[in-house]
Image (cartoon, rainbow, N blue to C red; front, side, top):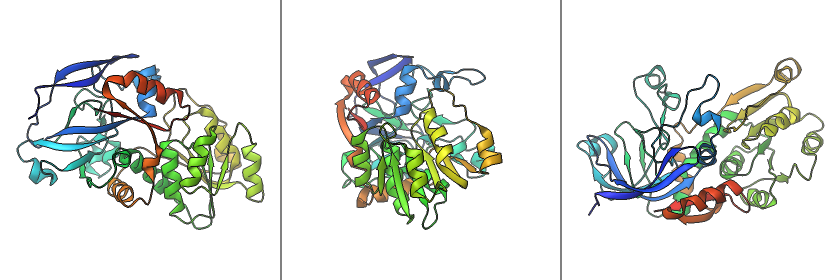
Length: 358
C-alpha cells in the first residue's frame, strides 16, 4: 500500500532545509515510482546547503537550485508503481531494484540529439530542479525521460548506494586516457577519488599515487589499489612526485579535491605534454598561471562531468566487488536526522560517505 503522504527533506533556501510531510508523487505516462532504500549526501549537496555561488548564482551564472526541492542525486530503490507504458519504455517491472542516472535529459537540445545527453542544455539534475525531486525522501519519481537501470538485489546496500559516484569516477578515468606505464596522481581520496584509484588500476598504469589531507582516507586508498599515498600536509608532494618520475612529473593528474590548491599543485607536478583532468565542484573560483598550461608545458586539459554511458559498468563493478565501493560508506543516518548527516559530511572527520536511509 503506497501512502498518500511521505516524509521528505525539502530545501527552501541556503541553510533552510526542513523535514516535511509532502504528497507522495504519482507516476504519469512512462514514469516510475520508487521507494527509496538509501540516498547519499554528496559534497555538492553540502556546498548547496552552505550557499556556494555555483549553486545559487553569482556573477553571470544563474541560480542552479530551484526551491522548494527535495535534494539528493545518489540513490537506489525499488520500483513500486509504474505509469502507462513504463514497462515498454524502460524494461522495468514493479519489484525491480533500480537506480537512475543523475541527469534527466530533455532529449531535444543539440547535445541530446547528438547522444551527448550528459551535457543537456536544459540540464535537469535530481535534487536541484523542482521538476526532478531527489532521493532524500521515502519515495521519488523516476521521470519518463530519465535513464534508468536495474540493480541486482544481491548488491549490499552500501555498495548499491554508491553506484552514482562510481559511475562518475569511471567517466573521469576514461577522460584521462591512461596509457600503460603511466604515473597517475589522483588528488582527493573521497568517494570519487577512491573509485578513480580502483578504476585507474584497471588501466595498468605504472604507478597510482593518491593524495589527501587525511591519513584515514589514504589508508583506504591503499585498499582501493593505490601504489603510493601522500599527505600534502606532511609531505612536499610536488618534489616527491618529481623524484618518483626522474624529474619529469606525473603523466596524468586528476583533480578531485574541490579545493583551489589541488589545481595549482597539479600544474606544478604534471609533466610537459601531460593530461590534467578536472572533476571537482568548487566553492570558490580558482586562479592559475595559464602560461603553465600553454607556453611552459602544453598540457591537455580535460573536464569531466557526470557519468555518460558508465552506469552499466558501475553496477557490474559494485556487484562483482571489483571496486569495493561500499567500503567508502562510513556513516548512516535516518531521514529524520538529515541535519546531523549534513554536519557529519561537512566535518569530514573520519568520514568518507554519509547515507540517509528513509
